Length: 367
Image (cartoon, rainbow, N blue to C red; front, side, top):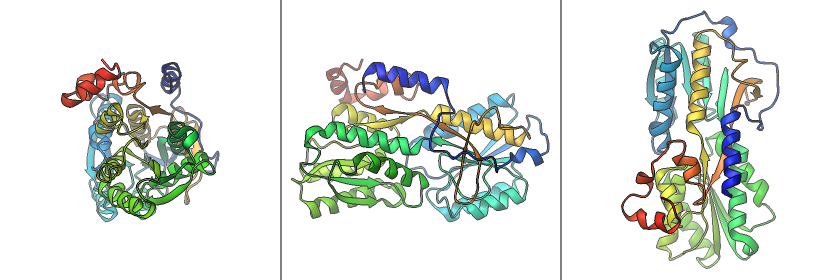
């Protein structure tokens, strides 16, 4: 993506948090605030995040949400945090603990979107509204914020096609999708297939258990063994963590110059982009998503309407018309690192270009 295009995209992100996506329009779901007692700033927000393998949740989401809740409540609001470490049973227990601790609202990034439904109903039965964060969980959800996940997959697919150019059908690609328990993974895959189908040959495709890099590494080794190292021309990887496992397997097999996609703009992913090991990532503005989640949670806890926050609606398998905000995304390449992750304060140039990466930064003019 050219710098001018990125500037337009960045401006669009700043101006419109309520970007249009695949959210379904419906008027069937009323704000839970209708039945909530009005509260002041002295509220307790339960924050449940799904895992700590991906750097984003504890490096960005947790502190950003905590900061915004404080801002919105005159420093009186409290955030009670727990991380499920990819264990849906543990997350269910954490919901029980939050209920016992009498939180006023829950922000839930579900490990397993289906398995969490019973726990969400239990919270709702106790009068605790629930914001689905980053992943659309099932059950009686009151609000939802995430990124336009189908567009994420399309963005990755388009970048891979562009990198392959007129050689797109000269070999086979491997698709390393995310965990089958994560509804986002299905949407990323849907978006990628909508772009790639008919234009590339998919030699092997995997739903990677728990999104773990080591599982992606094992899957990639199996793909190399089955297809042959001379036949693989590209890899669709749904996120940066799995891309690291994929790239390790490619290196071990002596496969070079194969474009690999990613997502999340992790520091290691950005550094792989500047060295050329990884072709791209998807930059998602966690500050915007965290801000919206905090705004939704505080409004629900205080018994306020979400009308001024959420302009869209989404449907889950169990709940219709969920007030929704979808955040836009940007394709991150070596050409727009400064305009995206550096500008928004994800990383400094000193962090990105530290140590052995300085030469790579100098080579692409990243100073």
